[in-house]
Image (tube, rainbow, N blue to C red; front, side, top):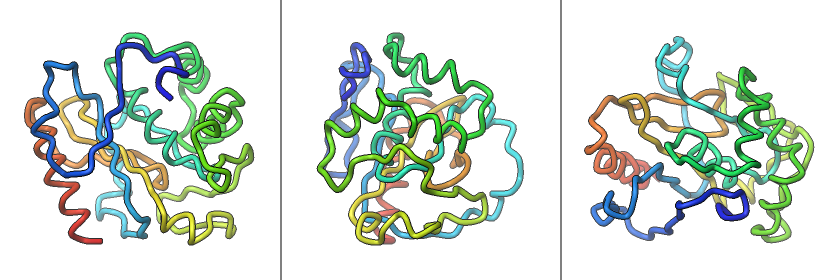
Length: 205
C-alpha cells in the first residue's frame, strides 16, 4: 500500500507480539506503531476539553467514512513522519487540507478517489470504504452515530496509531476528534514506553 501511494524507502512490518526490542534504527527510523484490536468504546481523558498548544504540530484526520480506519491510521503516521518522499497522492492531500479541521480532513480523505481506490484494492468486499460522510465525530463521545458503523465491523478491527513528535508520544485515534498527548519522553525511549501502553490496552480488553 505504501508503494502505491508513492512512499519511498519505507516499509510496514506486521508484529504479532508486543515486543519492540527488535525495532532498531539500523533499518531506519520507526515512524509509528499501529495497534489493531477489537473495538471497545472508552471514556475520554479528563483533560480532553482543554486546548493543548502542543497539538499545533500534529497532523490529524478524523474517521468520518465507513471502513477506512486502517488507511486512516497509516495516513496519520505517514503525514507526521520524517519520511522525505511521501508520494504525490499523500503530498497533495496534505497540501489541500492544510488548515482544515480534523473532520473536514476526514471528509476529503473519504472523497479522494485515489485513496479510496488503493484502500479498496487491499480490503475484502465487506470492508471497502464508502465515499460519503457516514460518521459524526464528537469531542464528547466516540460512540457510533447514525447506525452506519455496524457492531459486527467495529468488533472485528479498530486501528489506533502511536507516534513520537515534538518530544511527546501521541495517540491518533480516528474515532476521536483530536490527537491525544500521552506523555513526554526522549525519542530513544518512545518505543519501549509505547510497548507498555499497548500492553495495558490489551490487558484491559
